[in-house]
Image 1 (cartoon, rainbow, N blue to C red):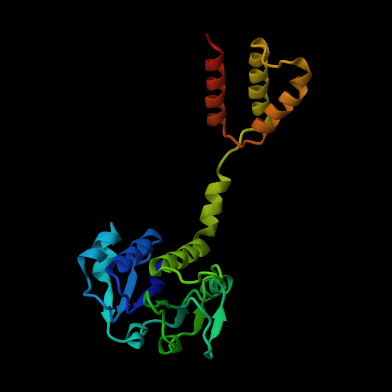
Image 2 (cartoon, helix red, strand yellow):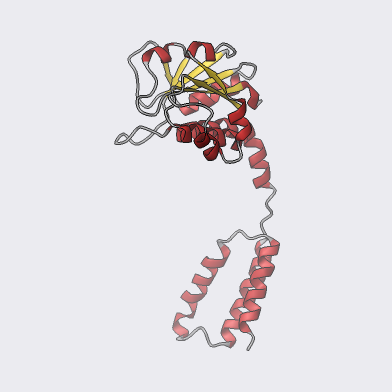
Length: 237
C-alpha cells in the first residue's frame, strides 16, 4: 500500500531537511523519495546524518531536473502549499485528502513539497490535481519542509492503519470496579489504623476525595496488584 505514495521535494536547499524527510518517511513505511533540481549536492553527508537509520531511503532517492519528469509514474498529484493561490486548482483540506487516498486505492499518488524559502511556484502547482494546505496558525503559516512531510506521512499511515490502532487499544483490559473497590477498602482500613481521618468531621470529604482519585483510574489487573503492594508496604513499620 505505502509503495504507491511518492514524495517529491522540489528545489530543496538544505541537506538536513532532506535527511529529516527521509527519516520521517521510513518511520511510517514509505520509501519513494524524488528530488527535483536540488540546490545542494545530493546525496551529501548532512542529508545522511539527519536521516539517521534511513540511509536506504536516501540511497534509493531519484534526482530529476524538472518537476514534470518526476511525476511520470503517478496517476494523481497533490501539491502542498502554505497559502492559497489564485490558480484554477481545487484546494482540499486534510479531511478531503484522507477521503481521496482511501477512495482511490489503485492509483499511484505523488505529493509535491516546495523549497524552504519560497514554496512551490505557480508553474509547479500547475502539474497537480489538487492543492493541500495544512491548517496552521494564521499568525505564522509556514511549516518546515520536513515537518509538513511528517504530518502528511502520519495522516496517510493513520488512514490505513486506524483499525489496527483501535484493535490494539481495545485489547487493553481494564480491571473491574469490584477489584478497585477491594484496593480502596484496603487503603481506607490502613488509613483508619493510622488515625488518618482526623478531625473526624472531615472524614466524609476525605473519603470522597480518595474515591474520586482512585475510581477514575483505568488500571489493569497487574497495575492493581502493584498498587496493592505499594499500599501494603507503606503500612509496615
